[in-house]
Image (tube, rainbow, N blue to C red; front, side, top):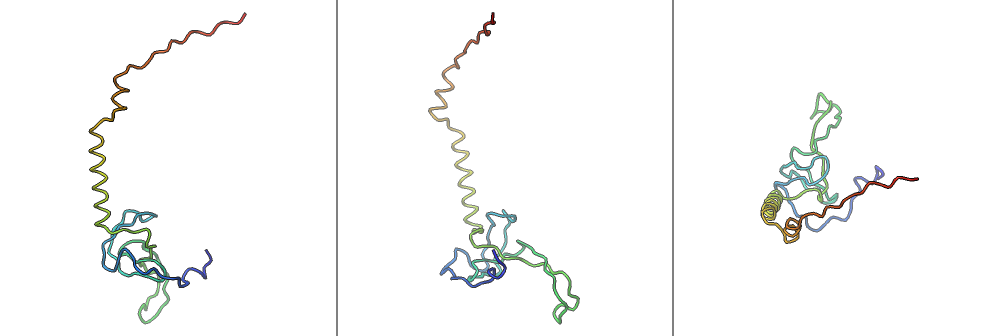
Length: 131
């Protein structure tokens, strides 16, 4: 993607599944599994800024606000599709773990049949010698 397209305004979504101050979990990427509170929602870019997630280092010039200048660490934006509400994420994880434990206790009919029948032994004969 060309640099000039990165901050180009797009047609924003009417509604997102998260809002400011929600607790969220990152689903994919290098920050996968990290949790944090949403600091800002960037509707025009379909991105969010999450507290303590996707920390980037940015060079800052000397100014009145930053008299020293130097390198500043701050949160970078993540795409909205990569995050999920923490409550929904926890519910999904607990539901899948319950299903896994319930299904591991019961054996299916196919498994029972294979255990009941002994495996057939095939006798291998030695290859015939050539004359």
